[in-house]
Amino acid sequence: MAIEVQNTLELISNIKTILKYEILPIENCLSRICASQIIATSFLPKYNNSAMDGYAIIYEEKKEELEIIDTIFAGDNNNTLIEKNTCIKIMTGAKIPENTTAIIPKEDVEELPNNKIKILQNIKEFQHIRYIGEDIKKDEILIEEGEEINFSKITLLASQGISHIKVYQKPKIIVFSSGEELKLHYEKIEDYQIYNSNTPTFIARAKELGCDVTFIGQAKDTIKAIKELITNSLDADLIITSGGVSVGDADFTKEAFKELDFETIFDGIKIKPGKPTVFGKIKNSYILNLPGNPLASALIFELFGKLIIQKLLGSKNIYHNFIFAKMAEDFKTKKGRITVLPGFFDGEYFNISQKRSPGMVSTLSTSNSIIVINDDVEKINKNSIIKILPINWKFFTDNKKDFLTYE
Ligand SMILES: Nc1nc2c(c(=O)[nH]1)N[C@H]1C(S)=C(S)[C@@H](COP(=O)(O)OP(=O)(O)OC[C@H]3O[C@@H](n4cnc5c(N)ncnc54)[C@H](O)[C@@H]3O)O[C@H]1N2
Ligand code: MOO
Image 1: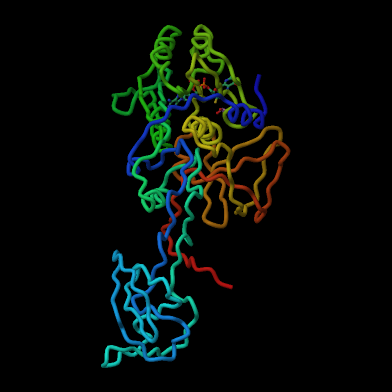
Image 2: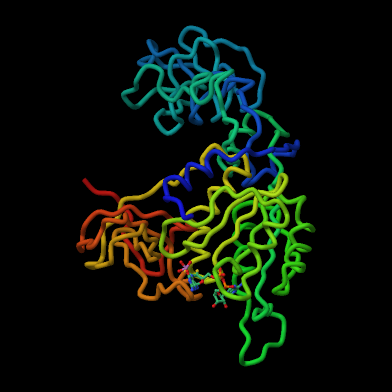
């Protein structure tokens, strides 16, 4: 029996996962999930240093002519102190003398012929000093367990001299398809046959989402053939298949599951499209059987499959986030079932795709987000505020926009 969308989300957020970890050099950790909390081992900056090329002075002496008594470069271990009516020439990033109370940029002083300087500008006490720990404090949490490693986490790790970290292993995903009418894109087809577009879609999408993906072929429409592919996949964390679950005479996937002691987590979701979605488990492998209809299966994957993958990756972010947008046009629908609608968000307005019949394949290539409308909605007015769920975002556009923020 089909279950409510909220229950589906709840069941997915509660699935038990056996997460395995490995130690990797940080350069190889992009898109991986951190498997332990990372604590800062040192202060950043490690010592008080200069933010400018210039002169370290004692603030009270700003009006005096100051003799240059030393020069400190970044990386020098120089412990000279500033003496009365003197200054020390200093480079950006260099450790400042302990008694420095201001740094004067080079361009704000007049260099006098007698190895002295005169300050030309009004200055503030403590200006241009970068203090120890103002960026990162020793022992502060840098990365939480379950956070994704991206370029900015690599910045943190490298700045601390952390070369290797513990990350979760990529979940192993196995994809296969059933449906004898389907042929792979590199096969020759007859006019009455169909290319299998779902399988390459899931392979690509699971890879994009950070999984280790294996394709093991296409089952013939017999229980035996489907069982063989499933048995061959039981080392996977997740098996993704599509098709063969509705009520047609050639829909054998469910029968095959039954014979392999499939534990059902849910069988059917009260959603449009994609109702005949099945999720369950055989031994330690989860199985997501998506509807055969290409758009239905891709949308269900975005809404639910992606969250299953977030769990299997070890991510702590296992819920959808959304962005408020405005509806581009009036929209009317039949109430009764929660509905997923693909479309395009241009930065302000969301345009529902005109092509959205569940069997279509072209829709998502021109969509960048989805909206999920409640079962009691009959109309959404133009300009009303809606919640969009991004699909796969690199947010650029082919039309030049003024992206500056004004008052
Ligand atoms: N009498 C009923 N018929 C159908 C019902 C129903 O409730 N009663 N539900 C419809 C809905 S909704 C869906 S969705 C489909 C689900 O069917 P299956 O998941 O069993 O999938 P198939 O029957 O194998 O195929 C459906 C459709 O999708 C195409 N397909 C399948 N696999 C792929 C693939 N890998 N790549 C591209 N296209 C694929 C297939 O050719 C069919 O056109 O059932 C409805 N029928
Ligand atoms: O609900 Mo089916 O999954 O429309 O395409």
